[in-house]
Every structure is written in structure tokens, then in C-alpha cells.
Amino acid sequence: MIDKENKMLDLIAVGAGEVFEKYWFPAIQKSGKSKKAHLVGIVEPRGLRLWSLTKIIPNPEEIWSATSTDRIPDDVSRDTIVLVLTPDHFPVVEALAKKGFRNIVVEKPLVSRDHELPLILELAERYALKLYSVDMYLPKTFSLVGVLGGLNNADPRHAFFSCTRDC
Image (cartoon, rainbow, N blue to C red):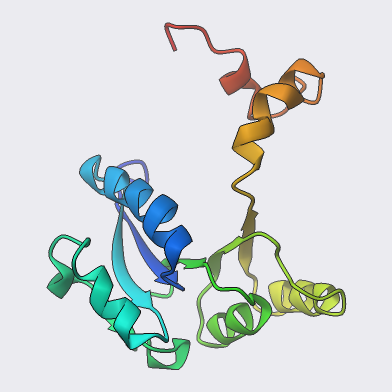
């Protein structure tokens, strides 16, 4: 039986720009220290950018890199969580889905053009995607949502809002 609580999650970053370096990578590093998640690969089309990341990533030789999703190694588990941090998300999500990845986290907005919304919903259904759209601004407004009554007891985030010092 697999102990899901203690299993370290594998992560791939697609797009390793400034947002990756300033926000996502430090969070991944903290997760790695607590044995929760670690970065196994980076997809970044700018070769010079990949090279510059070797200065901040400890043990860069342990992380594979590719210049496109087509070049993700075949032996990478399709259970890996993929972080899509590119300017244009739909084509990347589509390519990842076709390669068999199911766990995809997309930086906001989920799609860049109105006509892509039904297309991404179709992809999610066809490939049974677990697709998450993340907005870095949500944590900044979380307390306001709570104060204004936007959270109820059924909302899993309510526990964070009602937490005391002893949590």
C-alpha cells in the first residue's frame, strides 16, 4: 500500500521565467526540504535562460531540461504534476494532455482567448485532466473574502481563516 501522505510529489515546470524564479522555485525548494515535492524537470525554450537557472538550482545535474514539451523524456511518470508558467497556456496544456500528463497546474488565466475555454474544457474531459488554475492574487485577498463572509463552514479554506495561534 502506498503511503500518499508521505509520498514526495514530482514536479515539472514548463516556462522558467521570472515568476518561476521568484515565486514557484522558492516554494518548491521549501517543499523539498520537508520531503513534500521536488523538481524533476524544466521545459524552457530559451537555452540561455536554462543555463542561468543552473546558478540558483542546487544540484542542477539531477534535473532534466528540455526546450519543448515534445522533448520531455519518455520515462518521466505521467503522474508528475506539471506547472504551466508560460504566457500562452492552451497549446501547452494540449501538448501535455496528448503526451499523457493528467495533473496540470496553470498560472492564471486558464486560457488567453475566449474561444479556448470550450476547447480546454473538452481537453479536460477527453483526457481526464486534473486541471488547476492558480491565481497568485487569491492569497492576497483571502482575508478580505473571509471578513466579507465569502467563506462558509463547508469551504475547506474556512479552517485556515478560523485558525488560532495553536493551529
